[in-house]
Amino acid sequence: MSAAEVSAALLAIEDEVIWDAEAGARAAAELEQRAVTLGDETLIARARLCLAILLLRGGDIAGGSREIYDIHEWAARHGDRILRARTHSACANIARLSGEEAKCLEHSLSAVELLDETASPYVQIRHQTKLADALARNGAIGAARLRFRQAEVLAGEAQQWDRLRIVLNNWAYAEHNAGDFPRAQDVARRLVEHADAHGVELDPTELDTIGAIQIANGEYVQAEQTMHLCIARYEAGLSDDADDLAEFLLTLARAQRGLGATARAQASLDASRALCRQRDLHQIMVRVHEEQAELHAGRGDYAQAFAAQKECFAAQESLRSRQGEAQAQSRYAMFETAEALQDAERFREQARRDPLTGLRNRRYVDEHLPALIVADPALAVAIADIDHFKRINDELSHDVGDRVLVQVADLLEAGLAAVAPRGFVVRLGGEEFLLVLPATPVALATAKLDGIRQAVGDHDWRGLTGGLPLTVSIGVADLSESSPPSLSAALSAADRNLYAAKHQGRNRVVAGTPPEPRARAYRDRLV
Image (cartoon, rainbow, N blue to C red; front, top):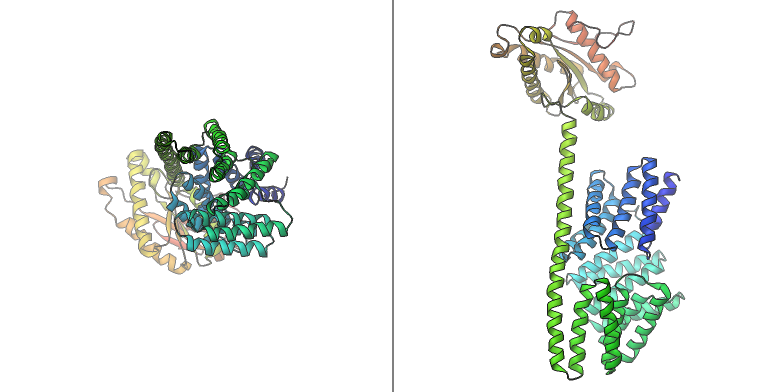
């Protein structure tokens, strides 16, 4: 597969509701391998995110969170706005699962803010809907209505009819939870009208929302019929989330209790309870115990109602404990990821520093200087070399030589910071240093570097070298000496001028030496 084909396949996962999480995870893992083969880091990150989101759906909060936070940081470092929006949306889901609704709202808002004109209509609608959901769960139902309305308009304009059903379903459910049952009923009516207009059947989750609203409005006969249809469609394979059937059976039990059909209600409730135990659905189990207490009380069995209420309290405490554990897992995953990123950044920085002097090294030059050369036509580069350094090593010791290198590095760095604050010094190797002066024409650079040369020569070296003097020779060049400008050409010109400085007696700064008629090896010069 080409990069474009892998991208299109990933988009199909990103822009669709994946009902079969296991199949989706297999597809994402295969696409990740193809992206690795292509060496495309962005495609790899997208595939990893798809897989991590499916891990969350499977209940692996710690593993999924760790991956998502890692990808979130990668997207931020690389300036990928759409991927950052997706990771913020995934982080919002982690926060919701951990019971951190305020953090969920913060991530949902960031996801929407990062969207631009390149985002697909599906992504825009989904992120607006998730923001509306988060606002509603945080008690801001007024603000949530505005976002739901925006998502509804977007879905209609883009003719994203499936997404429009989700928007209306979530909106109706939010109004129901907010206690505004007439408004919830009105939104649910629009949902039904939309489904009828496009000849589609409502899916089980949408029917469950309608059933809950009917119960709130006292329409128990209609609610029972709605929930039987809901469960029939679930059994036909139109929904497969682990908690769906338990939720549907609980809503059915509530409708049947409203009808006074306590035996049917008890059977539905028992079936929901069994699924909760089988699938560890602790949050729904709390509501099962609540409904059981209501059912006992409706039959006049207040002792059993009290016992069920005690079970409900115990289940709530257990749920709070589990939510605390999930939150701790999520926070630890964030900590682990942040710690790993700090380590990686520290190691990355160390890899670009000379261990003896602490200056930047040749790897840093190779990574950063080419871009500077392209962006700054007035850039000057210089190579400085310690004169007669071999004599220091031979007559005094290599330890003294190392201390001299450190001191020279400090003098060069301090001197350059004073005359070219945006410049930097690099140890190229041995006694050789590179100085980079942004926006400094070669004549000005020569004058500034001569001041640095004098500072090195005037330094009191007696404590280190005894009576041996210490000076540096410097060759400086600008980008006009080669066309087109390049890193190798700039360094070659600076090296040529350094060679001339050595030949002219050392302890001087030289620029403008014409190229030699024959190529000369880089190390073919006096030391």
